[in-house]
Image (spheres, one colour):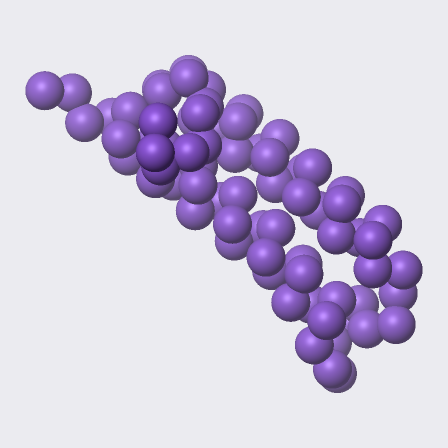
Length: 70
């Protein structure tokens, strides 16, 4: 049994959530760098970038589904 696709999906999902939710927290929490900025531009750009990075890293190992249910 080859476990590489499972590890790749785990890492891809981890990257996706870590980068995406990290920016959401940075925009919404007080006393952070992004407080007061235009939140929708930062959040949508960060989610797009996190999807790009996660797919780029995991596509060669697992097909980059990035969904634990698949």
